[in-house]
Length: 459
Image (cartoon, rainbow, N blue to C red; front, side, top):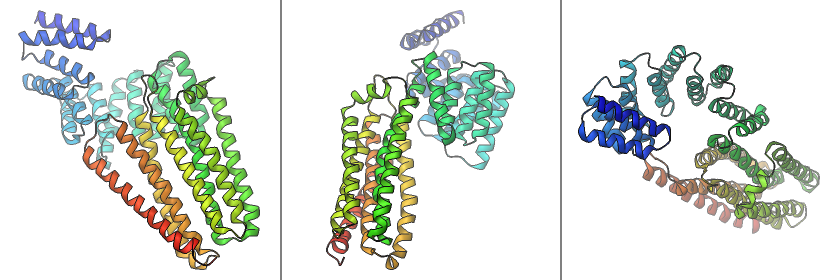
């Protein structure tokens, strides 16, 4: 037993120095002489989990459980491995078994909550997660690390009030706790009314811990989301002008389109002003200069906005078809710029990557555009026979198709840049490609309809 403890102590020391391969080697040598020792098996499983060797980690965790069915840390390692691999039922079984063995073990309670909030949730599972979090915090009410884990789980449960409460409790215990500060910035960013505070929190955090990767990724996410909004405003302008042309004549367009252009221009100015005031000095320039596709996208976006504005001007004349064509060209340019900026966002910066945040942005954008866009398009389609220019409706359908295809292409790009653990990568990729093909076919049909009704039909 003394030899086992000596090996475990040496391995833990190597791990504390971030020498994980050496720690695994030490434990492996000890396992050669004591292959069924549950402590060694649990320790090596934990090291292999950190090294992302999930197959070996699960195998050794199971062996530790077989050697000692009361080995809580082995259950937790197995639960986390199964959770990452997408085996939610098995992960829950291991986590619940650990809590049953040690009902007051903080790590077991937090792991159970983490597994629940990271998978499909029901009302019963949410309640179970809340009970586990409450018990963990009751066992360690002044532990900032525990409060940080609990706050993150509450955030994933969409309970921002509880997340805020635990962040504040944790910062009261440790005002410089980096995970709590990063989580506070994340909560501030997710609330539109406090986004400016998020950047201030991040800058303070990075001033104290300049290499804190999650904080650096969140700051980059704020920057790229702001730049992508520039293209979204051009989308808004083109769609608003075409929708307005269905119901208003040249006289109204002559007044309304300059107002819309000023709104977009004002939004662009606010974006750059806010970035200049929020980001550290030379932050924006440094990242853009290292990504020529982003600079090219921004330049293309300026031209796209001018083309769309020219289309709005022409639309007020007798050349209505030319005006629609220019608006579509501006929409294409803005979509290409959006795609280039998104690709720049996904590109690795040093040893950092923000792939997951990009995926969330693209996925939520597709859902929002489809839900809102299809409803609005359906309403306008139902009313088009009463409109002044029903031939504008196919143009609107084409514009929506361009946006949807762009966002789906960005999801495909996220999937392609990997790597990530996917539960069903073939199903995910196939579904995404099918949606993309359907969106392309729908857009193509809209253009064909537009060619017949808008450009060759009666004015």
